Image (cartoon, rainbow, N blue to C red; front, side, top):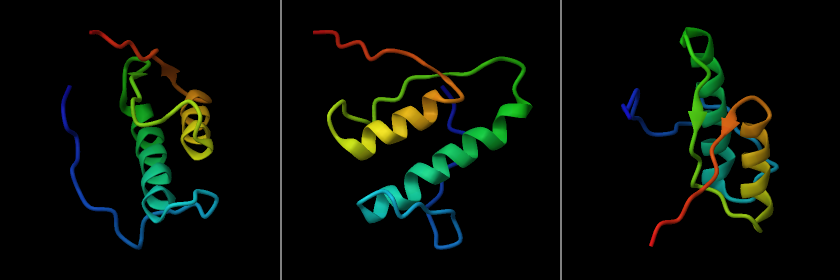
Length: 80
């Protein structure tokens, strides 16, 4: 895994008021926008392991479904 870009979210980033928390209003749309922006540059279909969402929290599930609409999502595997 490589970090492509590290930066703070700022007020010029897209936001989505349908998410309940201020951080999610900016974080989720920014992540989706950046992934979509970089997709044409790739010579393969990326597989995303998204561990930042819960199964029973509405806005986390919304984010997961949004990602799943254009990416292959890998299942979460817990190893003990």
